[in-house]
Image (cartoon, rainbow, N blue to C red; front, side, top):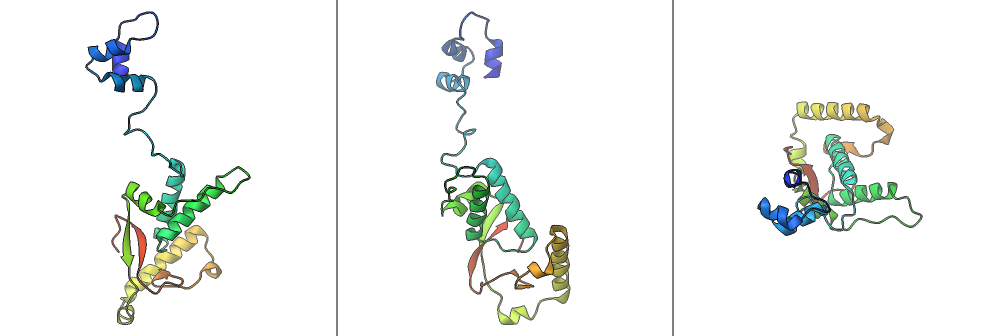
Length: 182
């Protein structure tokens, strides 16, 4: 559109959109919409978005942080994080808006970096066959993450080689980053 407007002849009054669209072989309705500031559908944001782009980025940072520290983030945790972000950014005295229960599905659809998989608890025999070097490497990574984040030992609860898994003993859905293998 900028090319069309720069190359149009200078006239008094508003530009003739139909004439300019014909001259440059551009769809008149689309050209008129862009001239009036209406974006194309590919540039248009989603309708009824509860989270802003910055808030979605904050959710992504939180998911990355949980993944780095070995916390298995579940769809319910994703909704809880989003609710918390909305509540912190809500300035009005009424109650902050809550996230739609379907948020995790839509969020994962719009962010292909994250995938949802079923995580199964380790069988008793498999628990005892872990390589000690792997376990040592895991705890060194965990200690480095705790030191970086300032997490005190007293702030940890039920932390073992499988990560933070309070009350989880069955198959459940977990959100992972797509580029990591687990």
